[in-house]
Each structure stands twice: as C-alpha cells, then as structure tokens.
Length: 189
Image 1 (cartoon, rainbow, N blue to C red):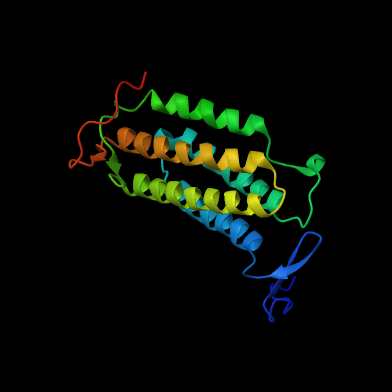
Image 2 (cartoon, rainbow, N blue to C red):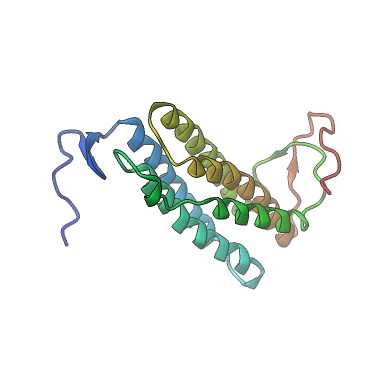
C-alpha cells in the first residue's frame, strides 16, 4: 500500500461523501481529536507496571472511541443510524471518574499541571480535549453533528483531570496546588 496519494496537493481532502478544503472547520475539528489521540497514546506509553494497568486499559479504549468521534464528524451529511458515539460511552466515563475520584485527596485549590511526567501528559490530554470540544461546539453551530461527541469530549476532559490526579497519588507524588488562590473547593464526597 502506498501512503501518499497526491490527491491533497492542491489543498483539498476527502471526507465521507465529498471533498473539502484542508483548513475546513470540519477537518480542523476531527484533526484536533486526532492530535488528542496522539497525546493519549503518549500517556498510555508512560503507564508502566500493574499499578497503572486499569488506567492504561481505559486509555486504549478511549483511543478507539476518539477514532469513533472523528468518524462521526467526518461525514458531509450523517444520518443518526450511523453514529458510533453513544450516551452509554459518556456514562461509562462518569463511572470511571467517580471510581478514580475516590483515590484522590480532597481538592481545596486549583492545581497546576504536573507532579509526574504521566500526570503532566494527562493534563496535556485534558487541555487538548477542551480545545477539541470547543471546535465541536463551533462545528455544531454550522452543521448537524452527533451531540454525543460533544458530551463525550466534555466528560473525557474531566476524566483526564481525575486520571492525572490518580497517577500522582499512585506514584506517591502530590499535586501542585495553585497557592496564590484561596481555598475554593469544598468536600468532594
């Protein structure tokens, strides 16, 4: 199989059902999701040992689901019957968030990205996920999209936040609090 096709040399690319400019918002949106997927893969590669096995398994599942998100956004016109991202995927993310939140200390202040390299990478995932979500919101104002993609990305960024904190806890490294603020959060439970 040849990797290059030369069909994009003039600034156009194929989407399912047609061709668009490579800087089209639709391409920018699923391209941002693809960028996120690369960072998720990087985070998964940093998860060595059994202590991170569950999180690593989560990230592998998430990488498949991010491909599903991109697929749902790659159509010129999509019928609901072809949607891959579903509400149950969002609900499962919420279950993971709740489970991992139990491992983390109570949050009192905003935290800065960091602690371990893994946690810092998961924070990168969180921020790229938020950017992807913003692109999906904008795209949804211009064309019909699967609303579950937007919900999934919203919840996924929360997952990355909690996963980053969990990675620090499991590594025995504290989160870095933003000490210039007052305590802004109450009990988590």
